[in-house]
Image (cartoon, rainbow, N blue to C red; front, side):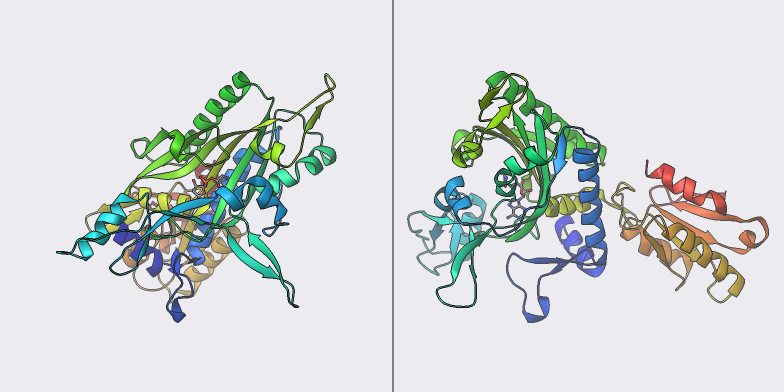
Length: 427
Ligand code: GAP
């Protein structure tokens, strides 16, 4: 199996990611997150929010509605320009994105011996329509294609309800929906996904915009590195003019070296005054009484892509041992607690009490089934950084063994030092 197959299999088997509505045959482009996938995504989002909102005095966070007045999308240009080019195979009528050569070649190989002709590219809008109300005619609206516009429509509300002053940012995390022509590569390209975005408002001048564009590129790249993505698997790639979204003056992708090639992890965009001017919004600077349309530097990451790339990047094999070398901050469980022997009541009750103490602060796994080797194997495979075992010695000296996921080494520590030990590993 190649790495991608291993991750898809592990994700399903251990409860990270399942195919959406699988019992009805699934639905292309939709994925469900299981108990561990949900934890991983929540950890990614919490760490992002900590870094982008709580640790900064110049950023506030909001949570806007998914469905907005359709005029928002007319003004933002999405109804006209948020499109992908689509071509159709004249033999079997399968439709593909015209700009994806790999898919075209793979498709042509399916018709071995025949010359495949394609229709001319047609533009297809990616916005997902919904209909509101119960009586006809129902009101047409859209599921948001990017979470971003929710920030712009609340630009004035945020300024008047907070003490924020330019330069400042508005952060948001939430679901976005795109009618992707070719969802694929597992959860990489889905029709429903989550974004974590910062819209950073700056004074409208080139020097300021360039400075902050560079600043955010570096800051966002470092965030992934600090959380353990290997530097050799990350790069920045500037967009050529023809690839840029309709709103962008400049764009750079943070890319990840995945088993299916270098792929976009996160986009850093200089949106200039595109959005605010389209929505007729300005900013009054109380320092010098000027009024202007700020420019926007945006960082836009995908939570689902982050979850997938963290899984891919952390996967390790050592002989028969499989482990996810996830940063402890990202790991679904921070530790697992075992009684060495499941039928020794005294041991189980000490282990239970350790479990209860730790789980007041952290998400902790409990396992008393099978032998200790199997329990280690099972926790390694889901990235649990520490396995804590209560054994015979614990009953006499109050120490436990703590096994490290990455080295398999064990140390003994006092059971009342466990909270401190885990909190140090997470700092
Ligand atoms: N507001 C700007 C914006 O939406 P984008 O480059 O279209 O920019 C930003 O998307 C991020 O959202 C991408 O880098 C990716 O992580 C995520 N994303 C976009 N489309 C996606 C899809 N179909 N499936 C999963 N994630 C997606």
